[in-house]
Length: 367
Ligand code: AN0
Ligand code: CP
Image (cartoon, rainbow, N blue to C red; front, side, top):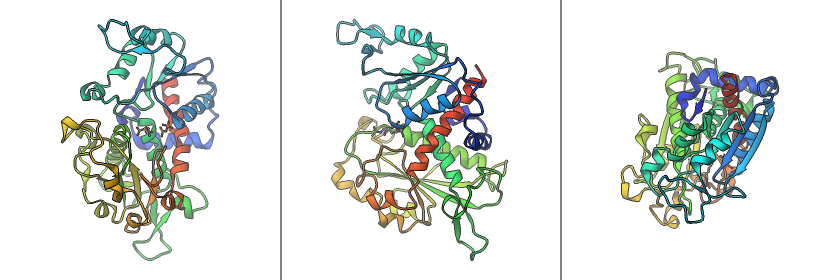
């Protein structure tokens, strides 16, 4: 692997899930792979999980790690060509990229959507330049449009915690792997488990947030639904996924990520029978309302019904709750739901180390 951006970059998902399980079994077994190899992690935006989990994953593989916060201590970078650089930016990305690349073997970049131009964001103007001018493998640590390390960790978490029919109870009853079994189920390989329903819901937030997380989650769920479904897929492994997206009108996501997903505008209807609820806020993707790209469409005070609470969770199939974090409590989700035994936000965050390690391992194997 030289680029990690889309779900297709990781190849067969049942193989990737099996590899994640192998990493969990002993995460230090590939220390030789990273010996004398350096990962450079570049952050244009804040991070807690991505920074720590990716650094930890690289160290598990025996790598050296350099972390750069571009906005704290580095020269301010110009990203446009042709600009007369008489402002506050002292260095151009076109020099900075090859210089940074000369000190490392692998580059991870976090650069969020800027909401200045939809075309620039959706063409991945910044990450494209890293790919073109670094000559190094580049993995996306949340770009303008995708957050694949998060979506991969989400898929691992869903696979590990998927409900399975409980043979000791009457039909229709489910058993949640993590809560009711003494040891975790294998991630793949169990057949005939029936359909699980995964609902991704928009939730209110006071600020305009990117679409990267919901874009990637949708992309990975739809790929998983195709590849892992025992009913619909060819491989007959892993959970069969019924994926539903719910959001207020105007928040329609880009078809390149959500084509084939069911959209249900009635949140309560969408939640009915859900096994997993994935909450996230995103700003207007500019699909049905191009003029509103990157905007919060309504005063959040009028949208508080969308905050995930007991009311919505009551109509689910005792659903597990997921969120990529950081989360604003009582905006996105109520205290009681995020603190409930069905909340998986902490194991989900812990799986970020695992997804990052599978990705870095694949890159190292191909250096
Ligand atoms: C970012 C976002 O919504 O994309 C990062 C999430 C992983 N969240 C915030 O900026 C709060
Ligand atoms: N989920 C996630 O990417 O968190 P950070 O923004 O803290 O890295």
